[in-house]
Image (cartoon, helix red, strand yellow):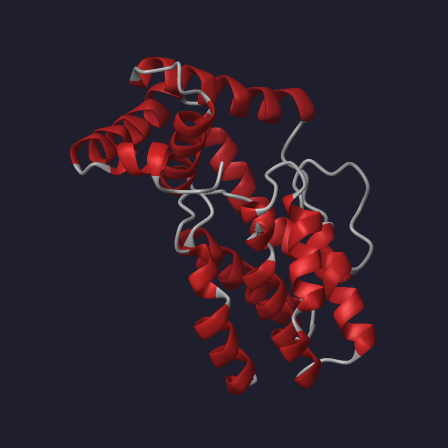
Amino acid sequence: MNQELKHYIEKNIFPLYTRYYSHGMLHIHQVIHNCLYLAKYYHLDLNKAYTIAAYHDVGLSVSRENHEKESGKIFKKDQELQKFFSDAEIEEMKQAIEDHRGSRKEPPRNMYGKILSDSDRDFNIEILAKRQLATSIKNYPDIHTFDEHFERCYSYMTKRIEGFGHFNLWTNNPHFIEQRNQFEKNYLDKNYTKEIYQKEWERISADGTIEKIKNYYLDY
């Protein structure tokens, strides 16, 4: 890793996520961890992998629906990155950021887009509970009870698991396939999953996080 690049991102890009909750630094660090793992596995450039993971959600401050495109624009406009990457590399990385959305039907245009998209998956029910409940609270202000939020979240996820025959993984990496399969098996045990979501709901209810999700955090 280029330490100057890493320092620049830590100082100037990570603070952009301060007012994000579902897509805050817990999520960003997880995506970076995954992206570096896949970059090493496929012998890709670690600096590129780290950078695209760090920038991939910054566009949420502009648009939820088109955040991947907005993230790509913000990345491309950052002239500091010209110190570390060529014009061709920056374009390649911009495409990867633009193509990372999990619901995308067409394959990402390059391998960096594939590893970023796969790295963005939440195959961890504890982390997913944090992100899903927060998104539900933010997007559905008329829902007030845990059971209502949980049923909405659970219905959404089970439709994706059962309706499409596994979450898509563009790299078909064996480690990620194993994680995905175990996650799906565990998630479909509704009682098990509900217990995890219930604990998260109790935590954010007790410490005031729900009010911050509604009134402070900017991401949806």
